[in-house]
Amino acid sequence: MNYMLLVFNVFLLVGGQMLWKKGMDLIGPWHSGILLQLIKSPYILGGGLIYIFATVLWLYILTKLPFSIAYPFQSLAYVIGIFAGFLLFKETVNLVQWIGAAAIVFGVFLIAR
Image 1 (cartoon, rainbow, N blue to C red):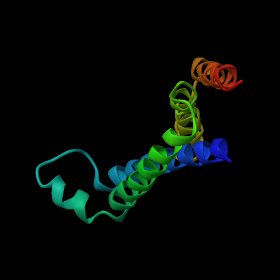
Image 2 (cartoon, rainbow, N blue to C red; image 1 turned 90 degrees about the horizontal axis):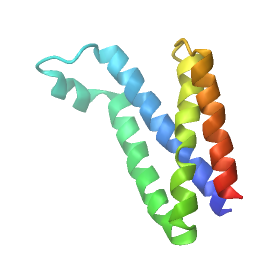
Image 3 (cartoon, rainbow, N blue to C red; image 1 turned 180 degrees about the vertical axis):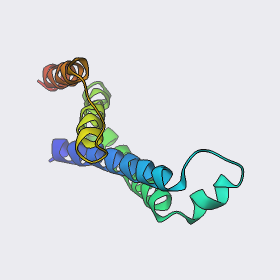
């Protein structure tokens, strides 16, 4: 159950980042007056709310799992982020990035054992 919560937490983190990416794609380059646009963007606000929930869940997870296992597990967010960039944002992911993602997954597997 605790590992399921940890995986859910990782997906929340990636979900929040994806909303922020979408929001910034719609807002455009950084400029004067951007703060008002950030405050009004449902994507930016939604990502922030997800991050608040993920943080509360993370605090709970820290009471249930050893830090030396839980914290490295968060690196799976990088792997999911690569897939999200590739599938949702149509970004190019090269072979070296895929190999790096596989190395992260293998490392988390070793730590979780």
